[in-house]
Image 1 (spheres, rainbow, N blue to C red):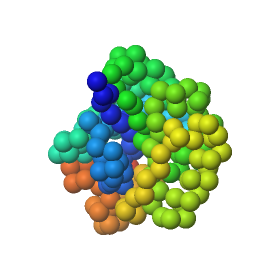
Image 2 (spheres, helix red, strand yellow):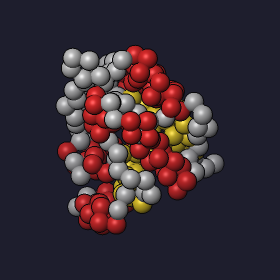
Image 3 (cartoon, rainbow, N blue to C red):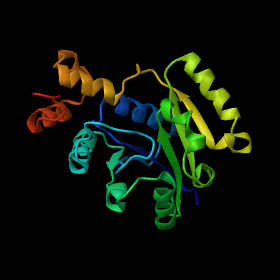
Length: 206
């Protein structure tokens, strides 16, 4: 019996934006996953994040972003685990609870270059393949070069080309702080409405 292919896309999602959704769509087109699970993290070990929306708000925004996309689901697993979100701990729980699944872990290109510094990264690769997206040929070549440094584990890392332009949550937060009209092009409509309704990312003195 063939295992189901399921991907997890973990992140701070502060906020979730169209760049995240484009990455999911490209991965789905490439791999035809049974589903992709958006999983907001609790306290990310790799980032120092200012202006962090609450866990519940970030979870709400993920649910709003995913509600009209059939292959997307949202999980609060890492939020329920409390403490710092380590990918290896999450994957241990997933592989224990769902041994019939072939797991993939989606990351942005910026995270790939420090992947060898992740806590117990070799164990992560034993439990899941890592999928990273490159937006330009130069970035794609750089990521392939980095993958070679992983030696025998390199085949556990897959890199796909993306059509979408780069976009970061930092860009989105800055645009929200300064009131740039273009920010509406960065966010799903329902997420933009939620941010406005809850007064998120308004900056100091606003």
